[in-house]
Picture 1 (cartoon, rainbow over the protein chains, first blue to last red):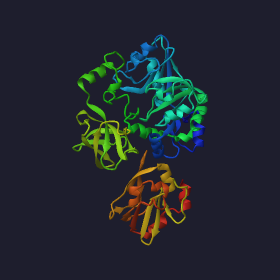
Picture 2 (cartoon, rainbow over the protein chains, first blue to last red):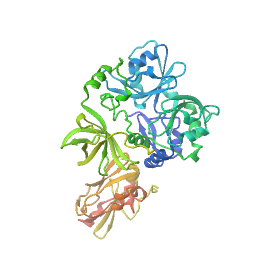
Picture 3 (tube, helix red, strand yellow):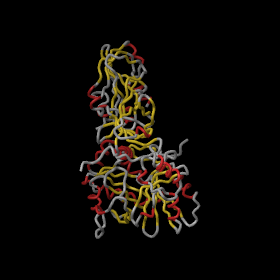
Picture 4 (cartoon, one colour):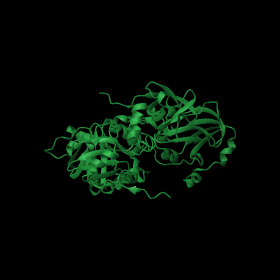
Length: 366
Length: 128
């Protein structure tokens, strides 16, 4: 029997808003409130508010914190200034992705990792396996809530609930983090997200999450709508962001996943020897974006073919609300990974032409 | 906007959440309110070919929501006489009006009397 799913501090608000709740990574989460497409479009046009409190947060402190992160992360944390962040990976010895995460360098020699909800226990065990005595790893997931405000009007809305005498929200650069009292709630405001839109992810004490959520939704005049994990998934897929457990997993490396730009080689870290080799000699398969030519939707697990032979598998797919076409990510043999290559996807017994395209699938017109 | 929950008394139902409306020897098929609610926003309908056969309890097409794919099951056997092109164009009709504008196909029935073996609205609702 599956254990009873856990509830975030905002659970009652979701139910009150009429959300359809689903079990996601052991958490009871809103998949949508009104509808996935409507919420997706609201985020692209105005703003969406997401409860992502299921995600995990670890604080790494102590004189050995940096030593641990240099060994455990595939990105070079020595490139970070205080208040900056990187997208990064925890890898196993074979270079496979145990988890993808964001690492933040906070003031006072505190490092913050934000990790996937379903991997919290695995990540903790992995970090502890380095046996770095001078590094303290504190799992603050249970006492931390996280709310994402994403969309073109996010900064405008935020300005209404932002402390005066501090630089305006829109002056924050992507992949930075500041400490602010937002809507009266002491918070860490990270200029990061999973939608391809401008926006922030705000972390606060779990028992203050309701005040923060209500403070943002009180500014409905900006057109912000509560948005669920369904829209979060279609939004991230349109901009080609991978989802761990689907597009990336412990058997795929960042190079195979076409995420090599986030890895800083020439250093020694867990899995680096495998990545060095792959960077030099190439890989057998690559994660690509596929756009279905006809109106049909690729789904996880569907075979990808060329000349009647299976050359790969879809790992995520949906109908893109923004471009109204079936889109998907999938691994294909390296020789078929060039944009412009036409392949086929077996969509329940029918072969549909699919073009390999450069990611993202969707880009806002300037 | 999604429709309110209902199971009209003048329809007959298949346990796999499909309804049928019989007029003479022709029948209209669709999916129930419960089915469209479970599926979520329908974004795609792959219909059968007009003139093709459908078999009772067999799949005759598929409906897809953002998150999932579902086969649609024929409550009765016959030959497809029409496909609802409005749903092919605007699949959300299945959510908005599952028993009216959101019908899926029309079928010339092999055996009109077979409808009697299907569930009535009360019996179907008891299965939910």
